[in-house]
Image 1: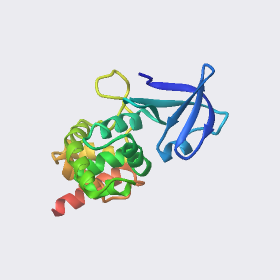
Image 2: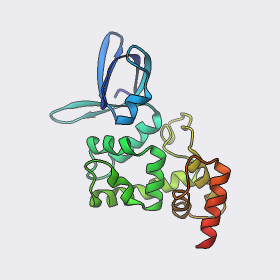
Image 3: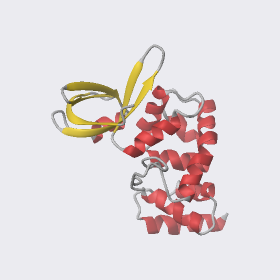
Length: 202
């Protein structure tokens, strides 16, 4: 299994990246958000990867962060979600947005991805809710993987706010639903204050 590749970027398109490592060029399919996050052609980058082996094909999928990589693995672990749908979801939603949507049961957020209909979106929200809810309750988002000894990926302001609200006694789903309605560009403290106001009205 290829976990990551570090080398020179030979080519980039909207949904693929070719990275050269030891004289070998690896073609990886990527979410559309990844191409823009990586250096220009000729630059050196690290691509976190996932290799999918089937009877008729071997495909490599690449991500700019370990958080995206872990999120992709979790998404494709849901029944009916293949690599193509996983890439499509990560092209429109960041890992933190996916975590918040799953925790709050906001299945409509997943329908923004191409190829994800209402039924599949509901299944995603349902199957991911417990996994993501436990992670948020522990103050952990989609990190480098539970128990692998690696440092967790930096949390967004929203994820930190949810973790803070959970520590105050609110459920992960209620906290995520409240935080999801607030501007994610605000400082963590402001998000927590506004979320508490919203929760106090319930």
